[in-house]
Image (cartoon, rainbow, N blue to C red; front, side, top):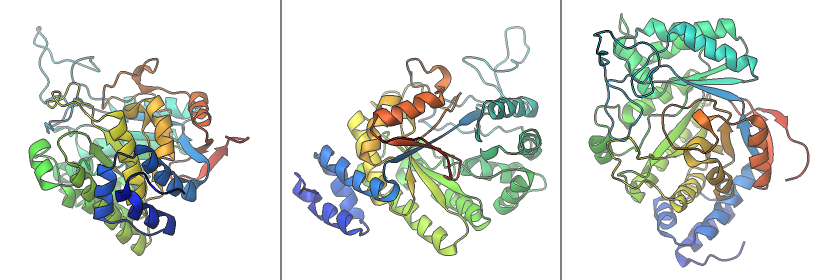
Length: 389
């Protein structure tokens, strides 16, 4: 690989080519460089070393069971306050509303999961707001109902924030470990990585003060990994955090992964950098990350977190075209068919509700110059596309 245009990246290049671990100083150099193309080449060296020409996708369905939430994070446009506002008639609103709150019954969630399985999905991804009135049994019944109706469907559900919420609302009160054990017995297979945001006390206090911080977030994933439950990790970037705080966040994920790998039971499968979308949030005055910032952050994630095997370009939040480009900046996964994603409201032309057919996913991957590989939730290949990129 040729020398970098930015001399500050030369040490990073030397370490990458030698397979050495990068440090905080290297991360700050990545954040500061204007050589975005050279940075992409470095990240591509690592992603091809790990995955060759393969890019992964899956057939999945996202289910958001409620948007009522006791929190009021400043970057969130999804949450609706509890209790819900009454209709002019004095009656409480029922069911899903375009501008209001909703909560799905267990039967409705199971029906959506059954519909997904009948359509070929291998995974349901279930998350929601912190509803103050739904009992812990509701979440157990969701897992039990899906497992009974769709025995082969992988249930990836409930962020660390939700798990702590379940612990606090359960009666008798359960520990995080007990919550995870009961959910697993009910059918839970793995955890998503949401709710991490940025691991920094200043950012936490300014943007999501009432939400659990890094100590509790890592505690949930530590318990999950010790129980043999795999999970993912995320980073929400492009709001009030600094580049240095992004680097620190990634280094904390890397350190936790080192611990999980040493204990040898389960680990983070995938790192998911999520761009902040300002519209509809209390931070709507902020511009959000640019496309170049998206690419830089994907590359930073791939280069800094050397022990998490996969980095995802989540097409719903990046856009399909930006996800294609991100595959050349270190990402090796673009998520899946999704079907419905209610957490953010980025306008995606022709992708109402966040739906993407498997054929189009494969086509996007091929057009970007890679081989599409259908995977299960834990990244076991299910169907490798024939032919060269």
